[in-house]
Length: 149
Image 1 (tube, rainbow, N blue to C red):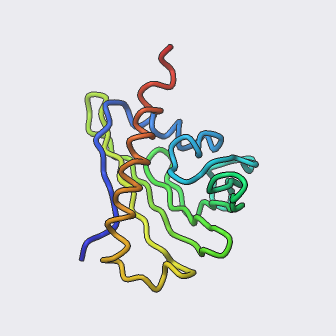
Image 2 (image 1 turned 180 degrees about the horizontal axis):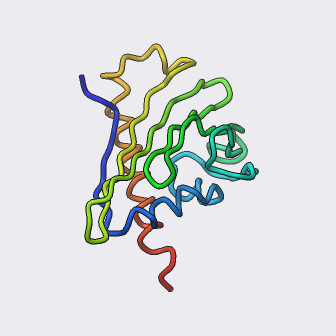
Image 3 (image 1 turned 90 degrees about the horizontal axis):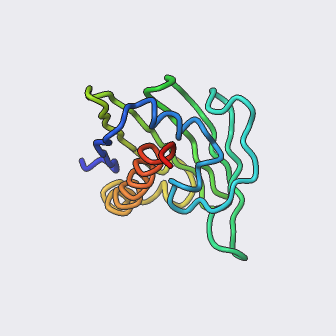
């Protein structure tokens, strides 16, 4: 079965990637579809904390949130991304060090409630893969270039 995931080798240390993931205010800069941050719970990305953001273009924005379900700091985040009416998805992000200031970042996503849950994984996978490949490209750019001036 084709898993709806995407992976990218990034030319930076995993700490640089984790620094972007751990800064909730950067979420709309790398997540395709997220357009506006409303709030970041104190302690993000600890289990139970949430990002409060909007998706879509104004004036048709949907308020939603993303909650941390599991975390292994520096290595793995399991998130539940919710969108009003649309349902929710589980998103797992792993960061594996490859040595010599490189790491591999993988995003695995699947719908777990709402209308998307009824769509077979084989049909979801190509769109999710394309979206997450773009997310990882943006994440890479932020991780590599954020502290260079």
